[in-house]
Structure formats: C-alpha cells, structure tokens
Image 1 (cartoon, rainbow over the protein chains, first blue to last red):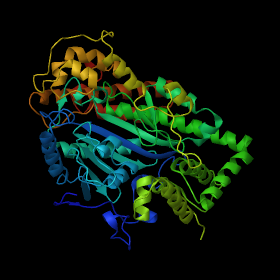
Image 2 (cartoon, rainbow over the protein chains, first blue to last red):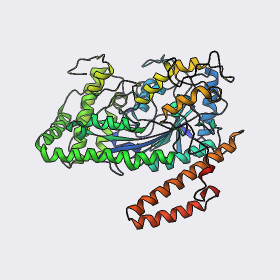
Image 3 (cartoon, chains in turn purple, orange):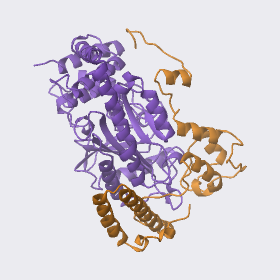
Length: 389
Length: 171
C-alpha cells in the first residue's frame, strides 16, 4: 500500500473483524457489512439486471502506451496519475492500491469484486506467486469507499481505465457519473486525443469514445428454455458482446452475462448508451421474463423442484465447488425473484456470489486454503449465511 | 471440478460454444481485428515496409503482431494503414463523434470544439427523428415535449439552427 494524503491502506471496509492479526494480515469478512454497490440488489429491473457499468479508456498525451513503455516510464505514469487521482476530489474517500506490491490474495479479491481486470491483477511479468512478493510492473488502482462505485486502474492496457458501477439497470446514471469523473481527471491530466480518432487507446478497438457500457444480466430462464444461444447470436449480429461474469475471456458463471457495446468510434456516448438502454438490454430482459413466465406456466413443478433442491443443497452441503455453488445460487436467485423463496433477499444472494469466490473465501476463513479446503469452507460459509434464524 | 476431480478440457471453439464456454478473446470484434491484423494481404491492409512511428519507433508490422499500438502518435504515423482496419472494427465508424477533452492541448483545441459541435448536431438530428416518429404515431404529448427540447437545444449555439448540420466533420 502506498502511504499518502487522501487515501487509505488496506482492503475496503466490511472486511475487518475482531479476530484479525493472522498471518499475512488476513481477516475474516462479515458479509452483512459489505457496502459494495453492485451487491445491493436494488434499483430498476433487478429481477434480471444485477448491475450496470461504464468504463472509459484514457491515455496521457505524449506518453508511450503502457505495454510499450519502459518500467521507469510506467513508474513515472503511475506517480503522475496517482498523485492527481488522490487530490482530484473524485469521491469522499479514495483508497489507493499499488498492485505490484499487493499480495496475490488481495489482488484476486479486487478481481472478484469487479474492481480490476484479471490481467491487471496478474501484471505483465506473471512472476507473482501465491505467497511471494510480486516482482512485476508498476501499476495500481484507485477505489472509492465505502461503496466501490468508482475504480480507476492505472497502467493496465491503457494508462487509465475508469469504471463506474451501479446496482440494477442504470446505464445513463453510470454515464453521467463517469462523465463527471472523467472531467475531473482531465482537469489535471492531459489526455491523448485526436479530432479524427477521438480518445487514443492502445488497442484500436477501443478508440473514439473509449466507452464500454455494460449490464450484468441473470438469464437462467433463457438457459432453461434453450433460447440462450439464440439471444447470443442475435446480440452478436447487432455488434453487441455477451461475456461471462468476469468480463472479457471469462466463462459465464451461474447464468450471469455481461452485455456490452463492441464499437466505440463513430457514435457518440449518448447514442451508444441509448442503443443498449432503450433497445437491446430491455429486449433481453423481456425475453428472460417471458422465458420465466413460460416456465412458471408450463413447468412449474419442475422449476420449483430445481429452486428448492438448490436451496436444500446450499443449506446442507459439506463440500461445494465454485462452479457448483454459482449454479445453485443462480437457481436460488431465481426462486427469490419469483417469490418462491421469501426468507432471503437478493442482496444476500448477490453477496454469496462474491463471498464464495476463492480469494474472498480465504479472507473469510483467515488463511490460505487449498482447493479441497476451499470446498469445505465454501459449504460452511453458505450454510451459515442461509440458516434461517 | 466435478465430484472432487478436476476435469481439464481442451476444446475447439465450436465445441466450447456448444458447452457454453467462451474461449478467451474469441469475441467477434477481436476475431475480426485479429484476422485483419494478422493476415498479410487482407483487404484494406496497406503494407508499408520499414515505416515506424517517429515517436516510439514501433513498426506497423509489430503492431500487427501484437495488436497494440505503441503511443498516441502511432495513430498519426500509421493513419493510412489504420483507417480501414478501424472502420471495419467499428461498423464503418471512422470519425469520432462525442465527447472531447475540455482543455485544449496543442493543436487539438479546435478539434475538441468541432467534436462538441458534432455531438450537438447529432443530438438535434436525433430529436428531429424522434419528433417525426412521435407525429407519425400521433403521440402529440411526446411530440410537444420533443419540440420544446429541440427548441431549447437549437438555442444553444450556431449548429443548433436546424438544417446547418454541414458544420459537423465530414465522414
């Protein structure tokens, strides 16, 4: 962690506990204390849309892009960006993490919280090991606390990757917020920009607005009805990307998918957002709702069986793998939305999808665990959280 | 993980898609870019031997191999070769529309203004389209709202006069 004014060391709050002080500074997480925005389960269309997100790619004028820059140049970029981001008044509280100095587990937690990308956690050199000090390149992330609505990666593929996240379906709100952050960042840093290509990015697929706007949708109904591939194909035809739970290159987990724009040049931000907000996402939401209604009408017993069985397994299992857990939580989420499960809310299900991930699980248990131990710990955690008091 | 055993699968993209697994980087846009970038002689690729960016010394061949440019200047250095690739990757988009930095840096201050004007022009065009649609649908309440919005937007500057869309950059 880097010391300095206006930011704090350590992981976001909600992770402190009375029995800290274990090896490596690992402390248990109290799920109910999490204030992470995308876990809230509130907002518009939360029966299908978990969260909305906007991302801007920005680079500093006159500097080589991160991949081409020398280590010394990257360190310089990092210093420049860090010092400005921490004084630009981007949020009431901003936490800064020097990722090249952060333990692997902490970096993986940030990935699981959707605050940094996997490549940003790994770094360029891949030299980091689970316990050892990473030796890779200077890079970092600024995160707003306690809600984690804003995060800014420095020295990822682009010098700056700004991200704003909101619970539920709120793409325009994400844009308004990120637009404002962008203005504030730009007030202190010179962006690379051209009249023709717009904001200049390391990869030409991001050039122009540098904007990727996405909705995380939960589509168990379409999977069960067998129409998921149809929707994916239709999205691809419209140049819309359908990605997994952890973004580019990740698999879908628990029927969660990220729907986002592919193209960034030639259309204004407003137009890009409108296409997704007025047309594409509402259509997908509608298809999913229709699929759920059909299942309720025609296969109600089978659907109820799946939901209650999933609940039973989660409440009683002694070993749970990540993938299995996500799939069961998907059924339970559907059960909550359809009113079959009344004793738990969406926020709890959302939290479990995060806490059941490997790095969070290890934080929760306060020590590093191998795969077998993680399965046992996951089952224990889920059982505790889903015990009806 | 299935019943305690780790199952490692090596699947081709087609089989992976059937199982609902998306291969890393297999999204259409990257596929498209990859194909164009890596296929010598692909349509639209103008081979220029030995040309390099004066600022970071990256050659176009290096870019084609790695898919990432070296610095902002590369866009200028390789503009002729990049333009067709960029157009393909962005559904024909070749001219930025939308936000521009508010601070003018170097020669780009004018560019920022132009981009802002272009955005306003696009907003007006969109409002006019919506107004037409509303009238066709006989949704007069919405039409009235749109007309007010349009009037307000028109008052905001010279591009605002309907029919003067010629001020936006050519595409």
